[in-house]
Length: 104
Image (tube, rainbow, N blue to C red):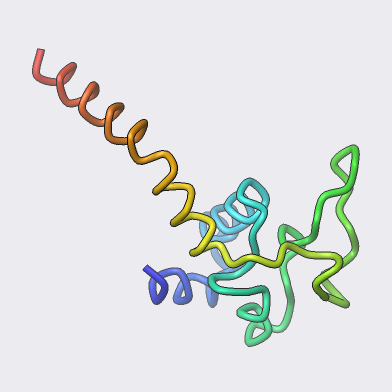
């Protein structure tokens, strides 16, 4: 999964659906990059979706001068893996319910 996530980073900004997927993931899970925000360094700019949110939906300025005080520090792979593990019972139960409904 790590390699697949990294391969999509190169398409950030040039493919709308990839950009939206990364932005949504980073904003909702409050994470940045695959393993760390440094993953974005090879692409020249840390996305604004990595910037920590302040009150009222405003974001800290971090795109030009990213550091650990103004952006999300955890990588999205770690956060997503923990989210899936923590919610596995709900995800599995929902999948079974949908499968049963499809049969009937």
